[in-house]
Image (cartoon, helix red, strand yellow):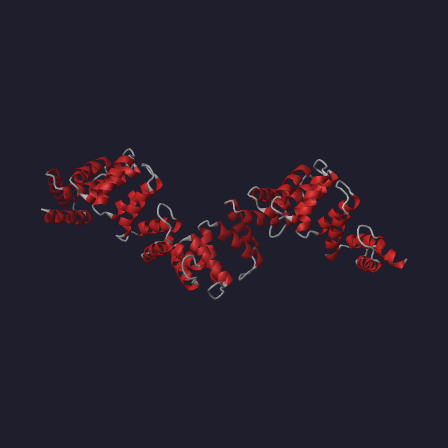
Length: 480
């Protein structure tokens, strides 16, 4: 009976494609009769006919009815199809419980797609309580049938120690199986593993091989990483044109890092003729996706009129977008614009806000300016202790102005207790960097023995250094 039925179904399809409606209807009637007589294969095939609308009007309800009849007789493919329909709520009310029930029955009969879907649902708690161990169980069953997505998802779990004990070697084994069968995400992850030497000996050639495989399948991250390899000549001969090719492929799929790099490449003419229009285009694409580096780069161009007409409103907008994401340089530039009123109204409070944000990220230039604002009560309430704090932070990072001003505070006791030792220390640090005022003050201290042991010879040397840098008071001391 099953062999005859198979012949009938094949005849149905051939008849349908030939356009012989009368013959098709005859064969269809035979198939229907067999289904009504309880043949599960006929019921399954009739379900497919109604599901796909093959020669009849598509009818999901009738498809479900016939799939159910076959499924209840243990037809594994019907069980899987029925589960899929309930899972997606396709033409009927979605019912995850029924989906899981039928996936389980099909999975227990070895249907790898059912095993994978069941693993996915347990892994994500989709319609059922999350159960990582069951997810691993069913992913493993499907993976043993070479289900590439099951192999990949199981590899991820071993890679991250998610639901199982972390096992990088097991992850690599599964990634490799999935990658060799063409799963692009597995190819990408395998490339990253070889690229970074994570659990294996670093192998740039294998990394590039798998990046290429994934890139050729349209994986945007692989395309970006492959482009970067060509761009930097990392493990492969540098080739700017190939870099641009793969950056473009990735960027066209919306990958913001590739878009940002293209903006830079076209802006600086790296491997191509400079193209300001393309540079701004790609920076904008990346910026609109929230890429803070691209937002900053775009803001700089609008602020300075590089590649575009100067537009400080757009500059402030993009600086703000990047700054709000914590992008340090954007915070500092935005603070400067508000502080000096560069194309916008001066707003010292906003300037202080962004200087503080940048200072908290240890940006010494911001710390030095913020300290000065607290020292003078400029846009903030005067607070000499905060001035000392931020000057110290900047000075410790080598900021020359902060070192000099901090030394001056300790020397005069302006807002802090006089501390000649600290004054000499910071004047010396600033003097070594060529600050003529610190050199002069240090010369005076050594000349008079103020806070240090008197040393006329050393004082003279500091006067010379300060004079050489154009500080007239130092020159006058030398002429005495």
